Image 1 (cartoon, rainbow, N blue to C red):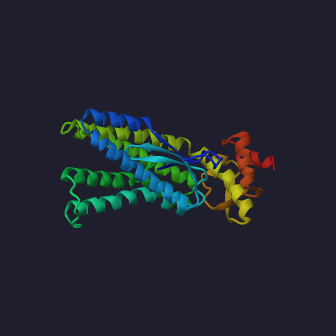
Image 2 (image 1 turned 135 degrees about the vertical axis):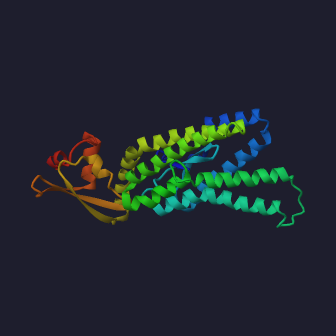
Length: 303
């Protein structure tokens, strides 16, 4: 599940559902393969997966404005950022795979006769539901953005590495997973041409992870703006001190900012004397006005 911070601010709007064109391509391919019944079931499973994310986000008081469905999950567009609360991001990200895991256990036990239910369901249908839920659970837990496992990885690393660097690491992992899936699909295609669908998923995963990496700094800047509002609302946030040389760029400083912390940056001159002490607000304002390549020394002259 990819968490977009540009959701509409008007909370009176109704929740919107959208099917990504990539999902429509998969539906078309499955229809050509004579799997129309499985298409409907897969759609319902993916919808349930994303609704699990949505309900968990609602429980965490994080309103969802729009849901976009993909073959292996979806994108939830939230009205509030999760980076301020890594534990909430882990909880919301894990909800989708947990939903599929529960269904996997249920359908597996039904198939082997554990429940002894009077309802008769074709064995091939139970087999498909079992395998589909296992795939959705395991695939979404792979540790790479924009998958749920990538969200969990980023949220786990961001308190130590900072949100930006954790996003870069998780996005690179997503790209590597995409390349691996492309190669795996091509390798298995001689045994069953439909295995090429793994390559299609890999291509999409590679491209989506690249977008996550490219937009990480802009997402982070928007998050910092919201963090100021959180500070005004709460009155207190834990602080953290960074010591940097005046030649350090704002981009390099921002990479070290961590969730749920308000940062002070001590700027040292060439002789390691203190030239200035910049707040997170000063650095953010300088980055927005003069660009991320501005040095701390130049930013300090404006204070």
